[in-house]
Length: 116
Image (cartoon, rainbow, N blue to C red; front, side, top):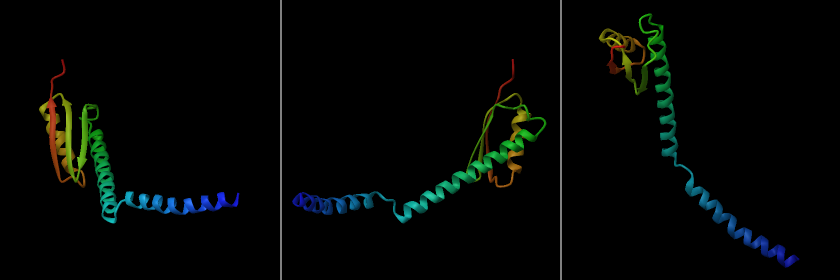
């Protein structure tokens, strides 16, 4: 019985350090963690900006019913996609988006499609 316990203890003493060493190699580096934090921060800022633009568009009386406008943003660049029923609404949506604090530029990719 004692020999079994000693053998188990010795085997564990060799296996655990190797297992711990394996785990260390899979951990992200300081640079990778910093990059991950920056990416999360950028993503959160983009989501916040997208929300502000959507709110501004929804608050406008002429665009309130426009549910076919999709808004995406990254690094202050807002992209508007979807359909509107007039060139005036397309232009107005772009102008509203440009006025939102934090927007650097707007890519207005809205399509004008007359309702039938």
